[in-house]
Image (cartoon, rainbow, N blue to C red; front, top):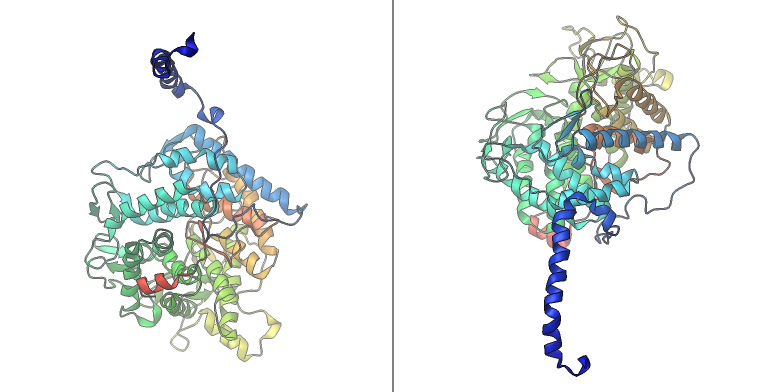
Amino acid sequence: MASHIPLHKRTLRLLPFALGAGFLFWSLVYFAWPHLDPSRLLPPPHRPPLPHFAPVPPHFQPGPPPDPKWTPRADAVREAFLHAYRGYLEHAYPDDELLPLTDGSVNNFNGWSLTLVDGLDTMWIMGLHDEFYDTIPTFANMTFALPEKSFAAFFETVIRHLGGMLSAYALSGDPILLARADDLGSKLLPAFHTGSGFPKYAVNTVTGEIRPGWTGSAVLWAEALSCQLEYKYLAHLTGRRQYFDTVEKAMDIVRNADVTDGQFPTKWHVETGKPINQHFSVGAFADSAHEYLLKQWLLTAGSEQKALDLYMRASSSILKELLFLTPNRNLLYVTDTTGGRPSHTFEHLSCFLPGLLALGAHTLPLAERERELHLWAAEGLAYTCWVTYADQASGLGPDEVVMHAIPRSAENPRAGRWLAHVEKWEEMGRPGDVPPGLREVPPKGKGQRDYTPRKNGYHLRPEAVESFYILWRTTGDEKWRERGWAVFEAIERETKTRSGYAGVIDVDQSPAPKKNEMPSFFMAETLKYLYLLFSDRDIVPLDQWVFNTEAHPLPIFEWSDQEKKQYGI
């Protein structure tokens, strides 16, 4: 009989049952869902297709068979990453960083799960794709909101959060990451609302209010010129001209500044755009600015001549004015000068420079003599970075030392400067065929090292192993891999805790006393560079990718004709 009932009446009879079933289903979802693990209920996430401009990402490319020596070492670094990451998830997430001695957490970078964001592309590079995709729901819900009187430090947020998401997007192609990067990039732009166009120290991502930092009216050179990689790549992905124009203005200010011989000072007035000191350095106030001059040119496939010209001016002055030798061991080091007077301070942060010089020697159209000098400087400086590790009881390098200087005199005002020694060595016919500063010496005890500790802590920093990795990839010399392995063994021995890894207070003790901190860059940079150093395959080829200063690789791209016209390139 039911078949003779009109269709619309049958539908009405079933309606109460359908409504009841729907109510029951959504009640179960509402009350039970918070207590369930969604990953157990949902199928594996769809891997989105790659954007047309990105190289084939790591681990999709065929590689050589495992190396019996180096594969286990790369695996050991991956296990170290997993140990740190699991400790962070258990004890610190969703806060920024783990406190590895107390199994606690700290919010010191906006409270936006910094360690997770900073370490995301390391997961992909290490082949930890399940862990990678488990994070995507977190990114889908990120708003980058701040309370009314809170501020995000512009420089750190760009290199860590924005750079991390852009790199993870470039590697995986997941559109959520690009959407969040675009959101954050736009929220940070009010930092540039200054008289000069240089960025202010910090910005509120909700109100757009900006404020200065500890430098007051000054902006550090590193802060002004270390956002171009991220924003230019973002401009290329989104087509938003504002991203390019905003950060290019800082490049124009520096190019047109009245600066002696490429000695770009560390502090500039944020409103007038004028230099306000005579401090020339590759250390804490300036390091990544030097990096981004070369890397802008590389990232955009050699199309931005302005960046290359600035890099050549700065690097020539570095070789001429900032490189010195010690009197006994003839260690080559880089320092800073104020009004031409060297401090002879050598920072661990400066250990990025040998990698940068090696990358330039490997990629730039240099004359042979110039290429030779850049490579000699790279190898000598990297060796000194290594020596400061090898000399210590812990096997870890101090954060800052004061190098012993060769005395100057009225007759020889450039005594101790590396280039003067190189020129004399060449005049003598290059005896021994080893340039000054490159002859290796055994580790030394206290009183014989040609330097005095100034800051004896080790903060899990990446700069030395970063340079070892680039020198290995550009020269093929395996000694840099062996030195990296010695550093990793020291990290495992001296810094590992139950929940992660901790910086140490005194590198010349073993066991070294630990400090209750695990900076996000340990997983973003230090472990990434070590893994790449030991990997069988060239996972992130230097002719296809450029690392930002937080070790987030971005793919080399070419501006289209339309983009060149639009941006005035």
